[in-house]
Image 1: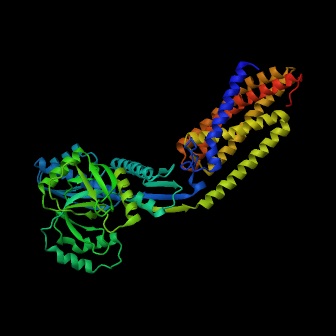
Image 2: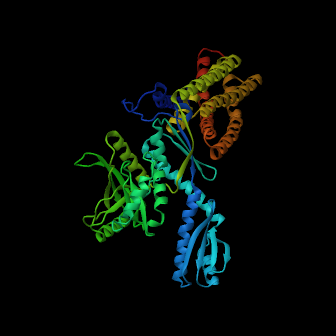
Image 3: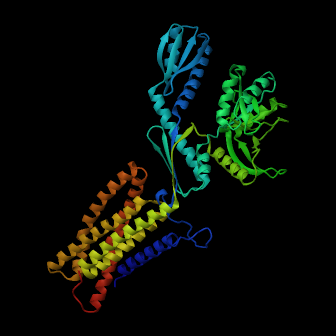
Amino acid sequence: MSSSWWTRCVVCVSCVCIALFMVYPTVRGLDLEKTHYPFRQKMNLGLDLQGGLYLVLGVNMPQVYRSVLERQVKGFLHRVEEKKFGKASFALQGVEADPHARVTYTGSRDDVVALLKKEYITLRLVQEAGGMITVGLSQQNRDDLAERTVGQSIEVIRNRIDEFGVSEPSITSQGRDRVVVELPGVREVDRAKDLIGRTARLEFRLVDDSVKTLEPFIKDCAAKRPKQEAFSVFVQGMRECLGTHVPENLEVVFDRDTVSRHAYLVAKDLVITGDELSDAQVQFDPESRRPLVSFTLNPHGARAFEELTGKNIGKRLAIVLDAVVHSAPVIQTKIPGGRGQITLGGLDGEQAMKEAKDLAIVLRAGALPAQLDFLEQRVVGPSLGQDSIARGAFASVVGSALVILFVAIYYKLSGLIAAVSLILNVLFVLACMVAFEATLTLPGIAGIALTVGIAVDSNVVIYERIREEIRSGRGPRAAIESGFQKAFHTIFDANVTNAIAALVLMLYGTGPIKGFAITLLIGIVTTLFTAVFVCRVLFDYYLHVLESRGQRHISI
């Protein structure tokens, strides 16, 4: 045996040992956290194999459009007055998908329209009349907003899910305003939904305790509300009931206590928001030993927080999260460093700890740019996933066994060599999926079965070339050498065309199609390795055995 054969043999054996080492924990179902196994990665199973949660969420784009339009129109009005083109005001109107703002002004029409077209290209002029223009968002602006909002939502959800500890989540966009979330292995459905859908908009608002005339109206409105009413419905009803009684510069918000639902009058102006947050961690109150969330602001937020607390000593500062007051402590002194705490009043034990952890996650991950509505939900049970594994594995084993049986009968002893390379091919595919942390899905199992078919096709091409060389009068070694050499280009070209098709499926496909394409791509690479490299090593050993026995014919 030549030194090159021994080198190739060592490479093959090493690859097989590494593959077995990587696949062993998955095959045996080991809990790697409780064992001393040195390799810490198992194969990730998709939603259809291990069960989990499937969600379709709708992004509330009308809300985004109205918010952006209102902000941009306010900036436009400020520029109108800054340019001394006269006083201006606006009112929102129009359909939800394309909101408009009616702007009234007292200055020159030409000056106002020229300013709009020059500095606010994202706004379009819809209509104009004497002393009034109607503006809306341009189509390009709405398209950009939709794309950016969905992209930001996916990024925020991904950050939250990563901290939640879900292995290989799938978070993708669907259409213009939908997000599809697949969470394999998740059992706490309600907690996961709350974590994903929570807007997590953190605000610091000064409480105005000087307006005492509102207290009777607040009590009367609260008395009219049903006692078991949902909190969001209660807040909406209270705001409609209070109506014009609330001053324009103030807003009514409520705490999370379901019994008292205490009302706070807070300033509308935002000095500090959650955008200034740099970190949030779960800690414990040293006195009550209850969990709370401590937060740290970035340098800009810390300076603003220090200035805010320094100017308003003796006043209350409400910490508002998603329009709910979590606490409203009295400012005792200027607070430097930008550090604070959010208490979880009314919660105890394990529930308080979960709430604190989830709150810290959503604060660290950032606020969602828009409200998300749950449009569809499917929970796949683990028993259904196990049944999919069993059926898929059974189909793959039967298909592979039939292929191996065929090559063993048709090509005799050489067919058994092909069968060994096919088995090693499947082993290498599984090992690569573990190494790349790819997720195995039910279509992925179909991809593995197809890989076996592609691999045996490569063996057939090689074997037919060898048989042709033997018929032309060549000896076994020369026939094998020539057969592998001449078949290589055909095999390579065929696998490249398959790889191009798989790449297209991977780049443009979603969900199951993408899982199938990834498995197929890995299978194409391993097929080239086993059919050309491993199979050749086995044939060389077979020839060595024949020559040592003085035989001159191979079984093919």
